[in-house]
Image 1 (spheres, rainbow, N blue to C red):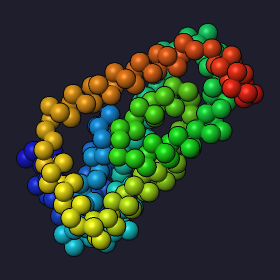
Image 2 (image 1 turned 90 degrees about the vertical axis):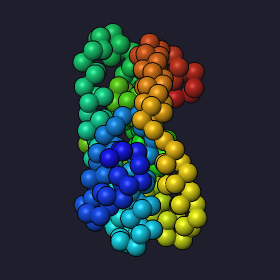
Image 3 (image 1 turned 60 degrees about the vertical axis):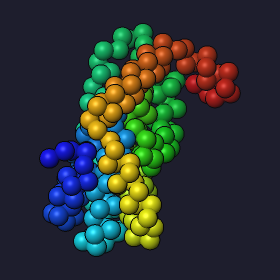
Length: 207
């Protein structure tokens, strides 16, 4: 069965909230892919199988767990950083430790590929312990919005599933994911090369 077809997602939602959780978990494990947890929510709620709020909670939990797994994988890449690079990034890490949650919630609450932001936060040593609740918060915002949109604005929900998801194929997804990953790697390279003490001082922040 085609992973990107509505039939695939419809089959998963037949398993109820566990199916929505599993679909969100598996879909969100695909790095740099946009909103794979959205179609199961729309299909489950529109079909009248599941209630909006529990569906949103199940989807957010699955997506958040998947993102935590990816985040810890991204963070393991810090072993490649030299001691000099780590020292240069220390001022940024202090800023991220205080305010990084805003970036996590903001990125997670959009249907865009949030792994670009998460990989940067991972390299900047954002806390894995804080990541899970904050990414869950962001995912819950978007999954709740999608669930109730599916309930009260069915025409738009149908358009998303039939016209947007229905036209997506594996080649398109792969090309977008590769391009997004390349952009993320370029951003990581830049992040590790900048002098954050000078940058934050110029911005009036205490490094």
